[in-house]
Amino acid sequence: MVMQEMKERLRYICENCGYESPKWFGRCPVCGSWNTAKEWKADGISRHEPGSVTFVSLADEEISSLELLPSPFEELNRAFGGGIVPGSVILIGGEPGIGKSTLMMQICGYLSQQGKTYYVSGEESTRQLKMRAKRLGVDTSSFLVSNDPVADMVLATASDPLCIVFDSLQTLQVSWLDTPPGSVTQVREAVSRITEFSKREEVPVFIVAHITKEGLIAGPKLVEHMVDVVMYFEGSRNTDLRILRTLKNRFGPSGEMVIFEMTESGLKEVANPEKVFIESHRTSAGVSYSMIMEGSKPLCVEIQCLVSKMQFNYPRRISMGLDPTHLSMLSALLSKKLSVPVESRDIYLKISGGFRVTDPGVDLAVIAAILGSFYEIVIPHDIIFIGEIGLDGSVKRVGGMEKRIKIAEKAGFTRICIPADAGGSSGKTIEINDIHELVRVIRMRGRGEDVQGDNT
Ligand code: TYD
Ligand code: MG
Image (cartoon, rainbow, N blue to C red; front, side, top):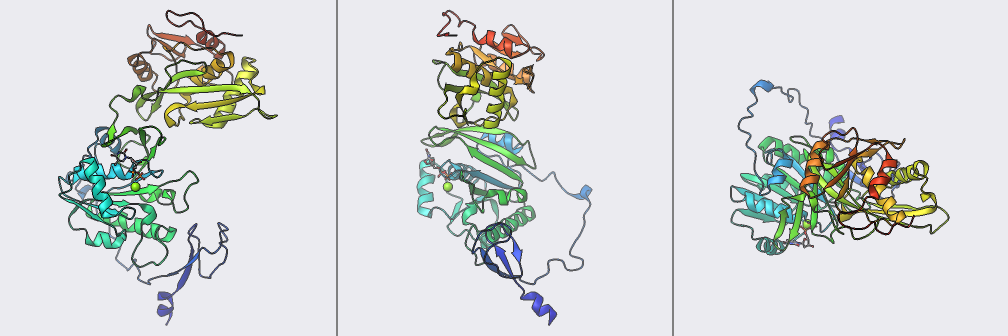
């Protein structure tokens, strides 16, 4: 009798946040949303029979047979940790239209030459998939597609898979739940079945996930902890550049990134990315360059700044690609240490190419760009700034200094402004101790030109 009750016990799960309750609720007590309680019947099958837990010696585990699967992209393989690890679940996130399905199709097309790849799309019809495959010039001989994103069914049906792709998380479901596809319960169940399968069968599984600026409810965040690798596509849809960033990788380096270019025939890796984020080639005041580290890779970024008259009765700090709090801090430092009256100006700052920078090595260049715009100084285009600024106005070294300097030289910069304690100095470096000395650097003449637009 008791068993019977246990078996049929009803639960209510909030579709929004996953809150569980034995009683129905109109409004979720955790997230506060209305009418999100969905009935859920526990199947009563215990997964914890006595003796169901077993241990094996780690020493006996055979790892030599784990062969990495290469993707068609060299840099991406490096980001994966040498190649795609069999038995890994990889989440590829990004805004709609950024190129996730394109990437997956290119990878599947490549892998399908070695074995069966299964592409399950809840987003596009098989005809549309075929059209894309044709456009991308993808070999479709062992490329199997389906429009039924029912995870458990797919996993039971796919025979001898080399790789499986689910596109997308938001359409995922399992056969025994009747909540809407992509809802919290569906997604959690589906992903947990997928990881279970992937580990057991040693098959890599990709899950594509949309993110929107507002942040989706049943979004990728919900399953990040369940998967092995989390990668996010970034970049604005207005440019061709796409950045794939590794947020988490259980088998390889995290913090790595790969730069792609979206072309007529799909995504192509950018071979020499150090200068791709440069837009304006320094024709105006308020532009400066810095060399940042993305994972192990130095990258040149362009900072554009506009200092203008205050529009309201408080100074605004608007920033794209750099944390606005960081911008506020650096501008406060400017008014305090250099007595530049930016507290009565609005400051707009943009990192070109839709790129997001969190590297503190960009500080010097940000200050240089603000000063450049404020004083209407065009900083000569062969100067680059690398260094962090402390709240006392001192300039500090950042990690990977030598690498950054080397790539800056390779990218054609002939004057590299760095902290005095940076090391790695060469004939091309200009060493400074604090932001007072930075003012001297941005007032330097361009090679073979007059000092420009200085109205101080
Ligand atoms: P897609 O991979 O469908 O985006 P997602 O799956 O992330 O939503 O990419 C769609 C965009 O990419 C679309 O705007 C068209 C463009 N695109 C190309 O420029 N070249 C190509 O070869 C392909 C297939 C797509
Ligand atoms: Mg898509």
